[in-house]
Length: 142
Image: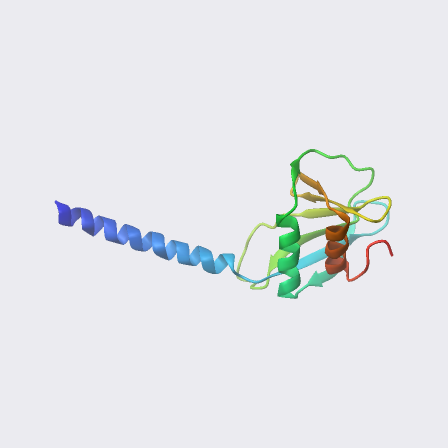
């Protein structure tokens, strides 16, 4: 009886270990950030920039990870100034991207960001400036 339990248990452990390894490999897959800029006054966008530098992509992830997100439904006066998604460099990986929408504050010193459809944050000045610089290659407020 004990042997029969081991025969079932060992393959189950192997499946779990192999599954964890596969997840780790996909989780460490390199990504780009595709940035779109609003054109005109309507909700229309054109591709503006692609962030390909892995360190910059990770820096954006860090900024957004450390942000205090609020679950909220926010109505803005105008569509987002920019929006971006993470896109895997490997074209064989198919994943549904999370849309990030970015508004520049009226004073042009902070960014307001929606992550998905319910998470909202207003970034502090330093993080806003750095995120904007990485996404656009420009200084915030110029």
